[in-house]
Amino acid sequence: DIVMTQSPDSLAVSLGERATINCKASQSVFYNSNNKNYLAWYQHKPGQPPKVLLYWASARESGVPDRFSGSGSGTDFTLTINNLQAEDVAVYYCQQYYGTPYTFGQGTKLEIK
Amino acid sequence: EEQLVETGGGLIQPGGSLRLSCAASGFTVSSYYMTWVRQAPGQGLEWVSLLSVGGSTYYADSVKGRFTISRDNSKNTLYLQMDTLRVEDTAVYYCATIHYDQWRATGWFDRWGQGTLVTVSS
Image (cartoon, rainbow over the protein chains, first blue to last red):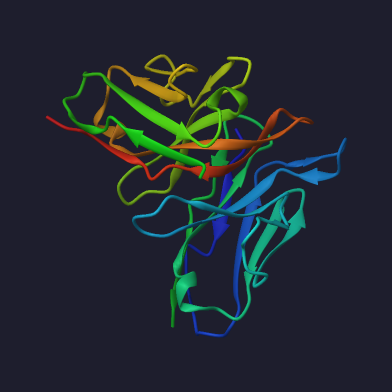
């Protein structure tokens, strides 16, 4: 199984500042045949279902503000949230969909400082 | 509007059975890879099961042999039959559609239901 490890576990950032969350896979999720990283990022707020923010590591889902961006390849990935807004308070998860069993990182709780 | 609505959760004793339903509207369940994901209290997200368009099924090791994923095309509904339930199966269960990628027959989870709570306790 591919183990996904996020850092940090929690993060407090001031409004308008940048938040950075890291995700490391225990093996590469890059597929050479199509040059894609099988890595997604989700935002999960209390009482709501998770919402996909990014897929292919850096492609933004429709409707997601461009403050959210993703980078990385192979085993190391980063979610960056610029100009942090109050509505960005949530738990963020990375997930590999390279193959089953699909696995998520343990989550990073983002709060306002 | 495309929507998924889960039902069937509740309180059940250890060793019991429960069937969760995920009713879809605005799209056809049989045309999509579908999945179940759960979140135990205070814990993160855990993938549970997958049903392909062709009917192939996949399970997390933690539920293999106890849970069964299926669908009823006439009802446009996805199911999760949960048998021999354990206390550690207590969680909110979400169904979701998978945005299919043909290269690896997989994809990210793009549409989610609101979830249904299953509590396994004596």
